[in-house]
Length: 317
Image (cartoon, rainbow, N blue to C red; front, side):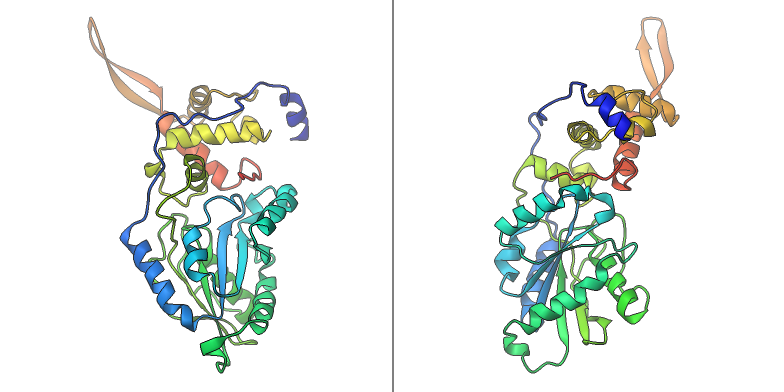
């Protein structure tokens, strides 16, 4: 892949991405508003907050409402899915987070439990160094896990249980946003110390700051695809991969060379994957059926191949 990068880095690509007249995606259904209200109501029973976010977008899309409503408790930021992120940029990211007054950060991969064992010792330190107020007499620790949809909150809970209790799943997981819809009862994840976790629904900000942040959230699967449009998501993904000189897609889809034209790329992907569709064309001599590339199916595959990490490790921020 280094050879490909050297060969292709001289190619000319877009320096900016034009979103046209598209509006910022909005997704704040009733269960999110209800979930945030429940989080605030349960806060007096909580000793520490674990905010989980996608390591590919460590800066973009973190819900400011969490800090506004839940920021009075000790806080740990867990950047999950580290196996999908380009961690050569993590020093830059950590500096940016420090400027945002985020001091406690752990990168994790819950599919392999990598770094998850660091979570309990760190939050134990944070709790012991804090004033527990109403919970000062409680012998157990209660943690609330928060985050935007589909960043791995439930996966983190299950990983903690595997690491510390040798037990299986206690919280549902899924590849689409919106699996957890209510603040659940306490889930034990550790015996020493006795530590319990409240899982919560993923909650987006009612007002996503920019279209570009919304696009990054969508590419990482935290916003439902149809709210943004897979056509522009695929185009923005292509733009990002070229800008960051991540050319695995060229080899993956046997394109021969990088390309900045999403229509051309999707056409070649559709042909390679044999994704075609029949359409009816109206001509002067009658209607005829034509077989054409299925651009929607190609965009679907392109986006999901990225999400699985098969186009290389990428930091979108």
